[in-house]
Structures are given as C-alpha cells and as structure tokens.
Length: 378
Image (tube, rainbow, N blue to C red; front, side, top):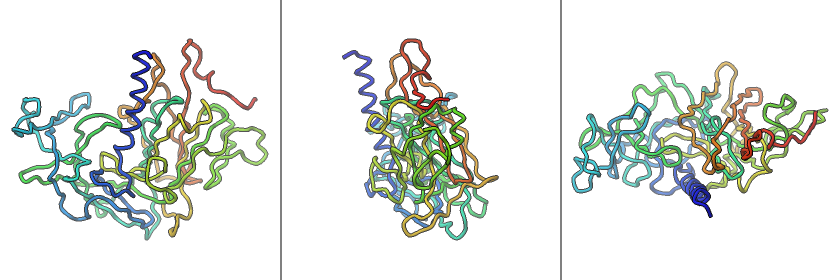
C-alpha cells in the first residue's frame, strides 16, 4: 500500500472517531461533555437535560489553558500551563501579554450552563438559519464522512437577554477544535457576554431528509418537485421526469435515540445547541450524484405541536464562513475540494435545503460533471 493511500485511510478513521466525540447529545448523560455556553430557547416548551444547573455559578476545578488572543490568520495564541510551574507554558515559554485562564470543555471538573427560556406561549419565528459551512463550501466524495449541521438563531430584544459565557478557541479546527470559557481572578470567575443579543432555538420537531437527485443540482426541472411533509420531495402531478429518489435517510429529532446513527440535537464544542448528523456516505449512498439534504419540521412531535417557523421577511440564511469549513477526510490524490451547495429557504413549506454533490473528481483531465449521471433526458 502506498504512503498516500495509507495516510488517506488513517485520516478517514481519525475523522470518524473524532466526529463522534466532539459533540455531546442533549439526551446523553455521559460525564465530561460539552457545557451550554450560548443561550437556548425551547420553542415547543420541551426542555432537555444539560450539564450543570441554570442560574448556578460555574464550577471551575478542571483543566485550563492560557489564552492571549489570535494571530492575523485567526489561529489561537494559547498554551497549556507547565504542570510543575503553572506560571509558564508547558514548553517553558512565557504566556503572551494579557494572558487569561480558559477552562476547557469536556472536563468533568468544569461545569457551567448558559441561560434557557420557554417560548412556547407564542409562535417562534426563526431569525437566522446557519447551515454547516462544510456543506456550503466544498463538495464531497463517495468515501466521505459528512457532518450535516444546522443552527437556528433568534435575535433577542434587550429585555429578553440571557446569560452567555465568553468562549475562547484554544486549538485545532473542525472536528478537533478545543474551546473553553474565559475567566478572571483567583479563584476564577467565568466571564459573560454583555449584552447578549442572540439565542439558539431547539425544536424536537426538526427533521432531516436525504434524497438522491437524478439530475444535476442546477437542472431547471427541479422546480417541478413538491414537498410531502414527513416523506420528502417528489415529482408534482403530471411531471414525466424521474427527478428524485425516495429518501435514504429520513428522521425527526423526536423519533431519535442516542448515538451517531440518529438525527439529534447536540451541544457542540463551542457550547451551542446544534442539529447534527454524521452522514457516512460510504455506507449510505445511491452512487455518485447530487443529493438533496432537507431540514424541515413535523407538525406534531410526540405530545407537542410545532411552534417553530421560517417566516417571510423575518427568517434569513446566514452566509457561510468558508474559513471554518471542514474538508473531506478523504480526497483523491491531487484533487482539491471544489464547489459546495447553496442553502435555499422555502418559507411556504417551512423548510430549508442544500443540494450536496457526492462524486469522485476525474483523474484523467475530464470534466467532473461528466461523472455525475443524468438519468432523465430532455
């Protein structure tokens, strides 16, 4: 086996392992998970278990790093303290000017919880939809582990502000990021963001659906598709084209168990509630093609009714930050990532979707598009 091939395999399995440990399911009870640092709204009144207690001072008895800013390129300036002399860094150097102590996530000795609120008394109109940057920035291949992440954000009026803890990036990017809460003083006091003007939104009614397109994602005939709640996209009445296949994944949060095989809500390493699913394309695919990944809502979710809405004139999709995109774990030799899907908002159907390209770039100088089959003709 070549060195390049071995490295690709190692990267794949490393990505799989790290993806599964850098987020904490809201429904898990494991110790050492991610603390809630960013406020969350329970849109349907369904609250879930989080580390710590609301309104209680953080417990900061675990591991910490020094942090003193970022480079012009955005890399953190940080270090572990020397275990024998915590006034200096582990490598013997001195922390930079203005260094503060940052207590890390995923440590049982560090526990905190940001503000939460029940907004089920009135409809919750989402302000922002934030799709994972990796879906919007790059295309993927048939061997990829694809993180499908969505964050719902609500702009807050000053009177609705909640506790938000000031988080700092300590090391790594993507699936190996490490973050923690900034502190001052001794004993340490966790710093808050003031004013806090945003919160995430949790809804047990959220659903993720993945379907293979039988045409390229820029095909005009895709406008003939109609949405069937709980089922997915299908061709409208009288449409003679086979435009899309039945779903290969279709699950709502209220239907999920715990683990990577389910669609669920998680607290990520930054301390935000996100909706996430790790799509193992190697094991779940219908060949190289464009796939529609749809985020929608069920009207009824166990014992509650939907109270979360994408509303014309209010809801917007956030632009991607391509600098934070997580690249495919496995790429063909010499082939850079290209493209990326465009997030679409459909308020009429109360959903948003991205058409994600799954395919292997051509190694013989041919067009990459030619490797994506077009099943239907003109």
